[in-house]
Length: 184
Ligand code: HEM
Image (tube, rainbow, N blue to C red; front, side):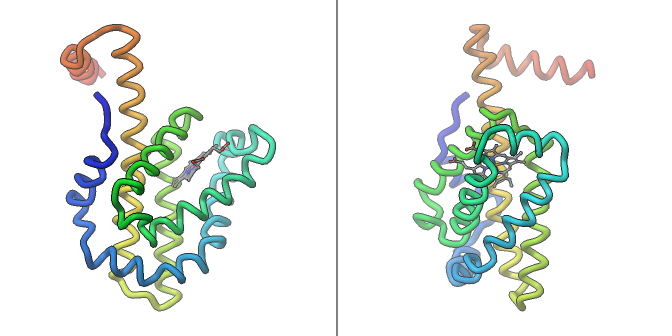
């Protein structure tokens, strides 16, 4: 069980139908993205700060929240530029972001609602600024691809840790999961 970011990216692009038109639209709106990135970061960190658990994580170390604002803005802009046309560099970067969240102990229950806030606020802003429905759709697709990387990292890291620690085969592990799910 080991995820290969580049082929995973290709699979997600195909699965979400993140088309050439979507990519062109995002590229064409890069400047707009940059102009609203800081406002979106405000929404994002206000939302995280309202949650006791997430606020504690954000303020755990000195300067973390400040650093995070900057990394959020970079991440946000990369959704529009696509870095290398949503290629290998983009995939590697998203995978690394996923791994960082797993290391800090941020799970699906934190990340999914947080990304929902980004999509919601971004959608509202797009409407207010007179962007078409197609821009909103393209952004929602790339946000979901990014979210999938973070979610998948959680599964991959947990599974690999169990396999390495126990020496179980992947087949046995999958069978145990199925059995466990049946008993819940
Ligand atoms: C929409 C979902 C999210 C996105 C797109 C996102 C984005 C990012 C990015 C780009 C980084 C920097 C990675 C690097 O250093 O290379 C990061 C790190 C981090 N994120 Fe998130 N994040 C998300 C959700 C969350 C949530 C829900 C929390 C919960 C509190 C969180 C807390 C953190 C923390 C603590 C770090 C590490 C900061 C440090 O360097 O000390 N993130 N995130």
